[in-house]
Amino acid sequence: MTHVQCGELYGDDPEPAEQVPAGRLCVPVRPVAHGCAARLFRTPVGARTAVAFTTPARLRAALGAAQPWTPLAEPALRALVRPLGIDTVTVDPALTPPLPDAPQVPDRPLALTPSAC
Image 1 (cartoon, rainbow, N blue to C red):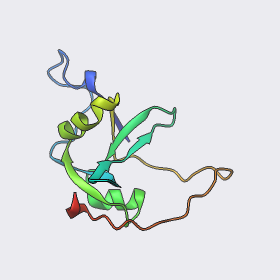
Image 2: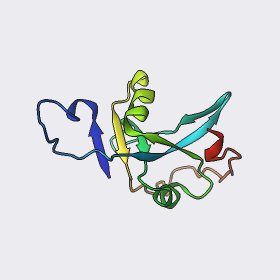
Image 3: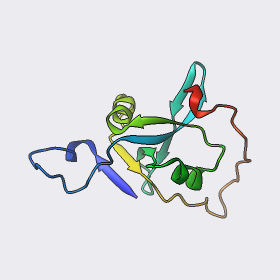
Image 4: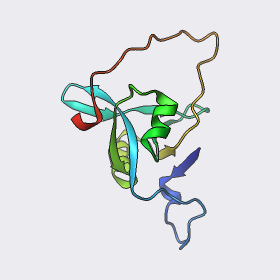
């Protein structure tokens, strides 16, 4: 799992300590009234984060085959979530199942497809 902070991306260091993925990322989305919006998640300590995957296969492995997604570059994803006060992008997270005492949410297939976004 990679966490990248906005302020740590460039700074004065010509070679950042943590490499940022280049190219297209697969960003999970959810349907909204007029299209779709990036799904937001929480880190293990409760901070909100945007999530992206480097391949569709990694997204499907973590969130299931029914999860709609859209391709976005990392700067575009940051621009979408920055007005919401989110400055962390988590790439290829290893998501874990809910705790045993957590209420279970039934699986509901979404009709939205990646090409619709």
